[in-house]
Amino acid sequence: MDSRTDGQIFLEVEGVRLEARVWGPPPRQAPTIVLLHEGLGSAGIWRALPEALVAATGCGVFAWSRAGYGASSPRPLPWPADFLEREAGALPALFETAGLGRMVLVGHSDGGSIAAAYLGQNDDARVAGACLIAPHFFTEPMGLAAIEAARRDYRERIRPRLVRHHRDVDAMFAGWAGAWGRADFAVGRIEALLPAISVPVLAIQGREDQYGTLAQIDALRRHLPAPPEVAILEACGHAPHLERPEETARLIADFANRVLLSQARGQRPYFSAKNRPPPG
Image 1 (cartoon, helix red, strand yellow):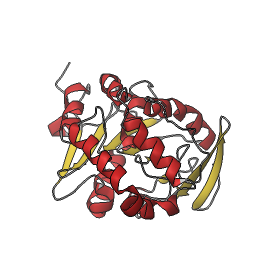
Image 2: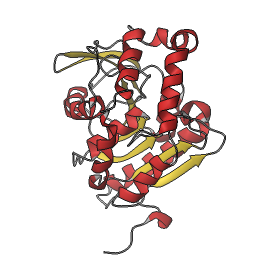
Image 3: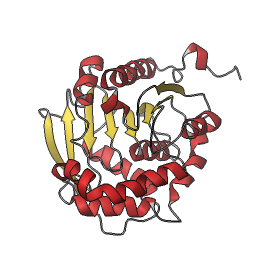
């Protein structure tokens, strides 16, 4: 990914064809902000966020559609209970194929869980920090109820909005909803990985998030070695980057600029004054 224009590309990663989209300078010229999409998302569903981040940081932005999403290769049904952890395990090969160097991870919902699982299992010196938007580390009754409601409303309300973003929208939805509905769904195993995350973390969540409560953010506060920076957005649901785009882009860009600067200076990970961990 050394030279390209903004737009759609395809990568072959361990036999899987993945759709990706790129904005701004390539990795050999600037750090990269890597976007990990939500459970019903794709590389092309981020709207104005990538362009806003390029303008505010000077970084390149890289997003891709996981297998089963967007225009990427299909994923066989049913999806396994640990599909989020498996996606985290696939990231090293993706990063290498894409030629990524210094980077900041930005994951929304399932993408935030995948980013956390990756950082909890890999001490990747290329990663300066991670922004987790409405991540999940365990299931909650209200979130499962929202998924069940999505099942009921899929044909009339959800499918028409998603069909243009996925080559097989029905298989994608069946895989995602089926995995989340399993009694052995393994998202809860990611919580145990949080104490091993060594990079700065910014957590963003809407106060009215219909898929998760602030208990998810409290898990970060309990388990991370250093306190995360936290932004709770009022009058906002599960997708802050879509519902409060300017504020969310500003928060991410400010965080990315600070952690990348600290990384470039060879300093310890950045922590704001109020979040700085105690000496020793």
